[in-house]
Image (cartoon, rainbow, N blue to C red; front, side, top):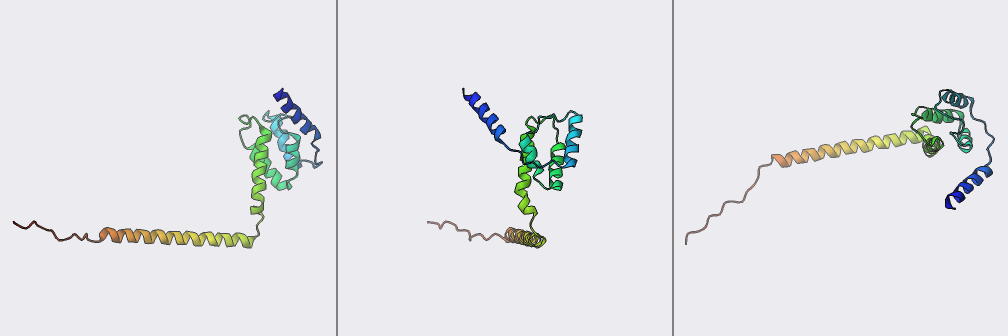
Length: 149
């Protein structure tokens, strides 16, 4: 019943998925072959759709992504496609930040430095005030004695 429908739906989705036609970069393919020869990766471990997505990255970024994947203990990773997809997702999210021009990056760094300097000044002022408060003599009200009747 239920599981059969999920499996059929998954198979249908895989069958209708079209390959982008982009080839995996030769460096990535060579690394995959190396992992397969070592028994760390089997031919069906990574879905074709994931490989197509990897091929969609610039060659240097794709190679970097696959090297991160290959550097992990692949014996411990059961869903290698999902793991590789997660690495690619992090690169897609970081992509716009990485493509900021140098002037924007310099401005952000300057603002961060200013904030750090302000925080240091505030902490120093706070410490100074605490020390002043600590060293001031305590002022007590004059003692009062009961009057004799």
